[in-house]
Length: 90
Image (cartoon, rainbow, N blue to C red):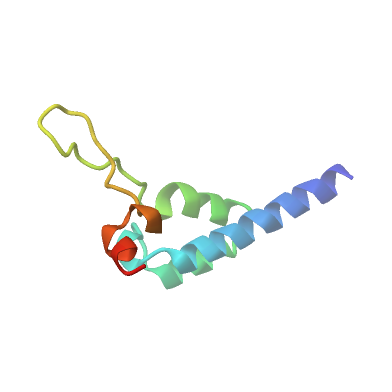
């Protein structure tokens, strides 16, 4: 039973890494081209782990938007009841 769990985890890791590789833009891939990374993924279980740790660029925090050093997120979408143009057309 323990070996079956390890196999399922390995398959899930491989599938996740393949879809992550496909979804990652080529500009965010490090060290090797995407096609070579796909070949590396075939060497389970070390291939998907190498992709996750070395293949893609990590998300960096955005720079502060003001001089106070505190980053404020951009405004999110507004609901229709907050949009004056929408309310004007009712």
